[in-house]
Image 1: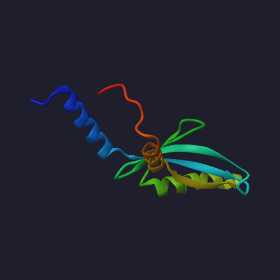
Image 2 (image 1 turned 30 degrees about the vertical axis):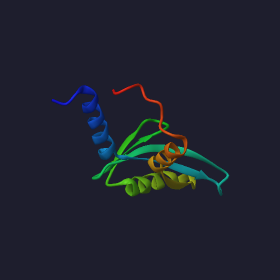
Image 3 (image 1 turned 90 degrees about the vertical axis):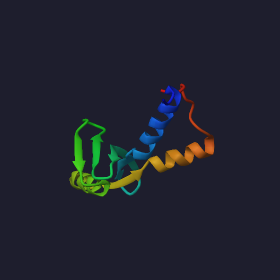
Image 4 (image 1 turned 60 degrees about the horizontal axis):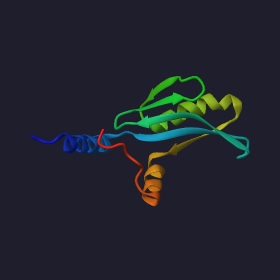
Amino acid sequence: MIGQGDYHRWLKQEAREQAPRLFAIAYEIGDREDGEIAAYGLAFDDHAETVDVDDGHHTRSEDAAHALALYERFAAPDNLKAHLLWLDQERTELAVRTGPAPTNGDR
């Protein structure tokens, strides 16, 4: 039988391998005069989900590009430009540069 620590490490590895990608949708205000984060999202293999920052509204789309297209339609009346920002790659790159984040044991 596998020990609890090894089991938790295995579960963490499974979670990492199956984790959705993290992204944000940001609005560009003016000609790069300002900006704001409109939503955060998770891109799964078969769909993407977003949560709006202002009101917590949830959306489900075919993928992150379709989520971006939806937010582009939301932004059109205000003449804002929407951008898709992938966040998980930057977090990984930061972790490589700074070392692993502190942990609280094997949870």
